[in-house]
Image (cartoon, rainbow, N blue to C red):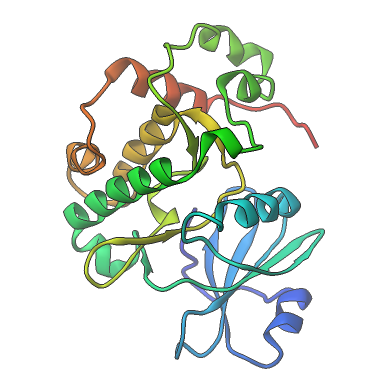
Length: 239
């Protein structure tokens, strides 16, 4: 995801949701979807997401995960939009935290541990396993991924544990997670490999060890390598 560097057009549905309130684009994803902050800043903003994406799938996951952890509460849903309540805190890649990457990395790691410990695998209806993900990978890329490492620990993974999707409060603690459209059961390294990889995209310096220490785990080069390759593998067009 990227932070828009200039104002973006506001879709009609987001303007309708805002009902005259201030609207500002805050995130753009690689699929062309945009997340807009709605409100005047006096309270945690509401969010309107519009564009490509499976918003029904995300809404189902938010509703389920919200029983156990801090995630956005659903306010409305359409075929190409999602409206949620905001959460306190700043994204881990907000300028405030970009200037303190060590604290941000530790908050991301501790937040992932909270998420993994809190979400009950036994009750989770969503799958993010290697087998499920390989079904979406192009045949040309699948060959090098058919022999995954053994499972370390099954958890309910975030599914997109990149740094921007952790929210951090003013005390430097994780206070919530966003963008859970791929949430599902998988080895915890499926999240950890991506979370550590994303640090290089968002911060200067080497902060992987800080994240993993805050999570409470030693580096695992084999699992990190595999799950990063799976993350980067080109997918077939399933839509």
